[in-house]
Amino acid sequence: MKEYNYARQSHAPDWYDRTNYLHVSATSGTSPFNEWYAFQSEQDAHDLACSFKSQSFIDGFVLVGEGSTAKFYHVDDVTMDDDLCDVTANPGTTPACLQSMVDAESAF
Image 1 (cartoon, rainbow, N blue to C red):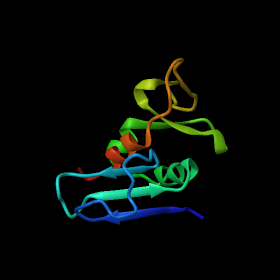
Image 2: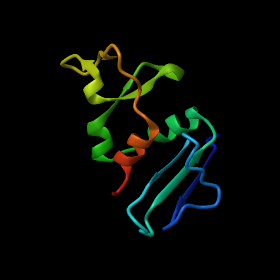
Image 3: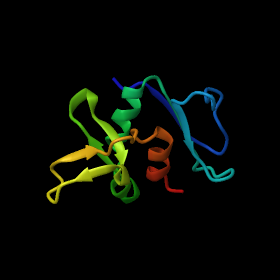
Image 4: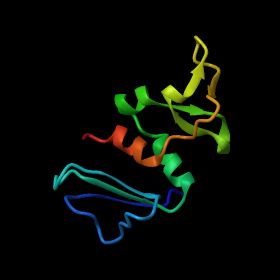
């Protein structure tokens, strides 16, 4: 079961903690469409990211690995074969941060 809080509103909800890396937002000023997320775990954040469908997200990120060890990386940080079947993270790169993935999925 996914455990996270979500709100779409102009200002941060009471539960939002900007110092917690598992709390992210996609905002534009005081838009009523600002989005606020607070995840209980990295796995919950990963599970939600697996459901992202925006073209910006699809064009910008790729899943590397399988099962519980799979992580999203920026496409510039991976090497892919011509069939996109073999995807490996480039040496020295780190998985994409949650904030960058939420930004890509956002309407802003």
